[in-house]
Image 1: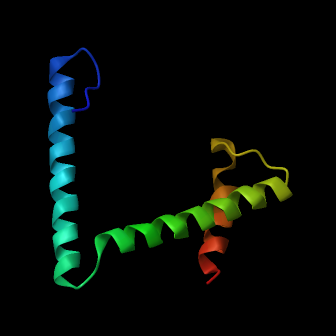
Image 2: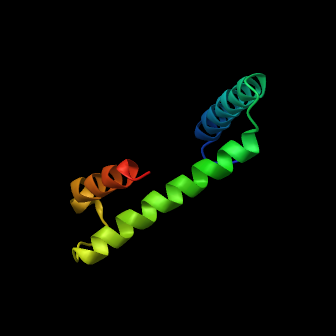
Image 3: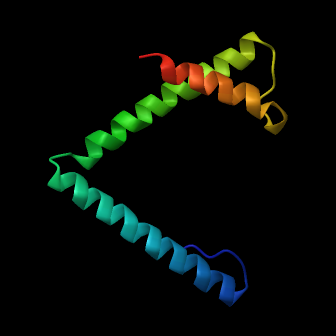
Length: 87
């Protein structure tokens, strides 16, 4: 289990959130199975898509000499949306 601090109440809340999140993931996997989707394949494809888009953002920032930080969130989102448009 993950613990967030030496505070037992915070730890209890964290454990509850993780349990609920796990239940949600489990439900999604079962729904996907009902639709005939292999959760492992779907996850691998999503990871590849994310990596591709993230790499495009990194490259775009590098080309424009823009650092990757919160100050340039808008630039990063613009590049992310451009990467999403590429099929």
